[in-house]
Image (cartoon, rainbow, N blue to C red; front, top):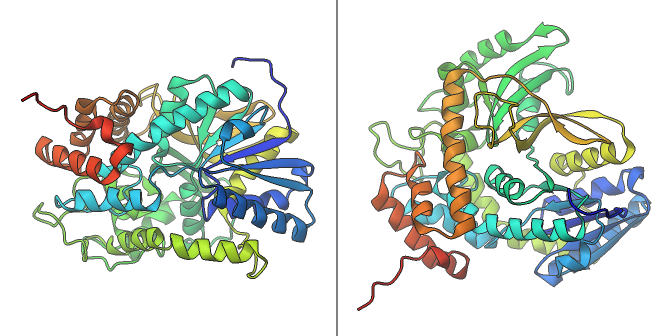
Amino acid sequence: MKGSFVSDNSIVLIGAGSTVFTPGLMTDLAASRTFDGWTVHLVDLNGEAAETMAKVGRRIAAERGADLEFVPHVDRREALPHARFVTTTIAVGAAAGWRADVEVPAKYGIAQTVGDSVGPGGVLRALRHVPELVAIADDVADLAPQAQLINYSNPLTANVRAITAETGLDAVGLCHGTMHTLSKLTADLGYNHGDLSAIFAGLNHLCWLLDLRHGAEDVYPALRKLVEERAGGVDAPSTGEEGVHLAVSADLMRTFGRYPAPGDRHVAEFFAGYLRAADGSPADETDLPWGLQGGRDATMRYIGQKDALWEQLHAQADGKAPLPRTDNQEAERLVGIAEAIVTGKDHVELAVNLPNEGKIPNLPPTAVVEVPAVVGAAGIIGLGVGPLPDGIAAVLSARAQQQEITVRAALTGDRSLALQALVLDPLVNGLTVATSILDDAIEAHGPLLDRFAAAEVPA
């Protein structure tokens, strides 16, 4: 880590226009006495969005009796000097960009349930996000080199890999998926929240439950039995993500011996077959197999709800609507991590995304893996979990290598690498389809991707 800066008591949120995460973060900070007297800098390219969030934050602080200052910014370099924590929640291309990441591949028979982490949508999103996140990280290294950088922007794995490969920052990625899976498993097995301890490991959005216990008792046999009793198959009814024992997750447990997180709409995109018809042909996007239609519908609804969410936030900023809900688990984790670092009171995080460096010895050492971590005054320390089962390691190694190529493409603007990254995705059927997807995405995203356009042949 370069520099000898002394950190201030400040938190910088870049991408403060995040309609769900930012209100949750401000609410959880206001509930913690650890951050009394701190300043929260809210940075967004849309100045009106940053100002609206600051107004919501001030109202939250006033009603919760918290000593917090909220300051809006458009220029991140104005907000960053000496920050203690920096969080990134950017969305390059916003909701319209996400929609294009789903709809462009659909023209070529490729159904995606989320399209923000893997699949061709995940590749396209990485090509947009990686350069901007590395630019942000360079500014953090310049102005707040001792800050802990915590990224939430997807694709989480590729983004954290790019940041840690290109800068000397302490950077991790956080995702609430494993936490939600553990909560659902706990409830379905008849236990109360917090009764079960678990070890998850893998890559973000395909993270495997390695161990599940109630005290010293191994609960995995009971989980296997319950999954077989409740889970369906290829003709499972569409569930949205209601309930834990979903058809794809059950099928993956039968295949690889471990239960995956965080739900079918994410894990299905890592494999070639679940989002296609039984004969391998493109699936009907209005009637996906394996109960996946509800997951895809939920994604499209979420993309379409952004305007309504902003109307609600404006009303909250003006005092005309109740304050946001207070059960945003993802923001709560960030606050818990920051509390542990500030106070030195160690705690264990269920899953943090950081460079492998041997924590999972049969995955590439440069891969960004999702593993448990101990958090305290020394920072965020990922824990080694040992080798994964060979079949799981094979799936994850191939994906980590594809993401490495994706990161290189994003950093260099190399069209051939971008095409390789698309071809290597299990959902993409060859170079012709990959080329069509890339060219259509360039047209849809304009300046955000135009460096990947094919060179014009001189007349």
